[in-house]
Image (cartoon, rainbow, N blue to C red; front, side, top):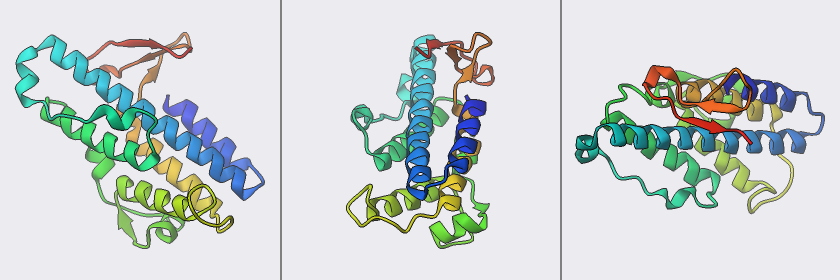
Length: 187
């Protein structure tokens, strides 16, 4: 999945119009967040099915945010799911996601800081989007370099909990490193 998303991010970067880059990055962000959330939800379901005694360690997750979610709600849901999987035994599942890193120049412009975690970067991107034509504001003010940096950062930091594409190119698998074998068709 990571390879597919990285290819799409390179494609977004090649678009000529700034608003097209923004639209492509928004779509990729939603797809990435949704796949990460579904994969983590599958991991939780498989873990609880395999060992019902872990239910007492399960941190409740409000899945209503997954119904027609806004981008900020998806970011919040991903954070909740990461806490839940860590509580159920997936050690350091969210480490890369929450780890503070030195930001590239485009991300510094977006976030207004030199260091942040990817959750902070995503929330800054959503705030900027909300201030633009996609939200409640005026058109323009796009920063395609920052937009592409946002999606690249998300893909890199979410990679440990994104599905793996099977050799058939159609089946998505929960990564073996987390000890599950759920299969889902991409169709």
